[in-house]
Length: 454
Image 1 (cartoon, rainbow, N blue to C red):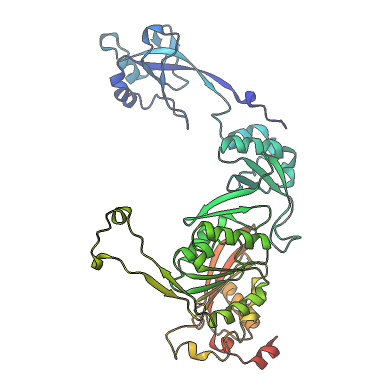
Image 2: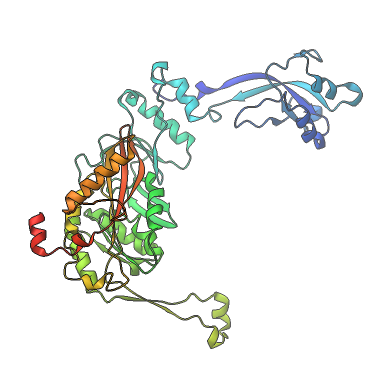
């Protein structure tokens, strides 16, 4: 089958039903006949009696297993509980034939694919897909391309919230530095303007023009949980704001940047929609320069925000609160330095680390031990091959980070290194996040040393 024929999936089953004489006893009878009742997923065993039994229109019946047969008015098999309940002297149920129809709506996506695909193609039935708003995003293997339209049709039928199904036809970022991809529409309209909700924020964007990965929702939440209200963070590859906007909701000062003009446009619009514009400073420039320009600009920033308390509608209406009961406004001052830098571009984020060399040269007085402020944490995402030796992998990435910073990391404790396993991206490829404290020798290195290290 290459074109979906929904009628093909209609199945008729002849069963026996136990009609309950008194509807008040339905629960009792169901319990008594527990071992004899038909048990199928998504199929309730309690049904109205067949319409041809006119004298008992308002009764309910219990569907019985297919091996419960009728022979005239006698029970054909040895079902002790059923015999007792149908005894004429105290009859609680009577038996009747029941014609059960299972149609296309009953069967699951996996059921239908198993019935449609050839047996030699059923080892890995395509069940994995990403959902971005109303769009289902498939990445079909070559052997399933002849069935792609059929797969998309079934997928839409079984997922009512999905209105468009697309299939990726190249690798993310293969020909585009903005991490967008080529796609084909398999079902529904070619409309990728989506709305996504994550971490109490609403994101609107054109999925065909920006990068978004719904499978990273947990990771976004994990990292944002590390940010404290009043801190400043630098999101170098911010996209449409999955880190930036939830952080801003926490009263975190966010400097968010993305090289993609479409991502920047969506970031600004989403900041406005989520009412966090006062905490979000959005840019559209190269990430290498942004690390330095944003850090320099923040040093000279004198921004303050006055947050006025929310007054209940009742209090506004009465207008008779005592002055001592009036909540005071909160004034927040932007810090001079970032507490965190996010480098969320796994394919190349490590190459941005040299830009941190000498980042705070001649500003030692802003940090510990001159103040209570620690040097910032850097969170850099990267891809690596799967390995059973975690310690070897940690040593490898520590060595690579140290090489790029021109600094030997002698142990993970020295820089508070944390390696977080984010997710699988391919059978032999994983995505990680390395978080570390920027070393003193790197942050304060002199300009001449910086030039030599590059």
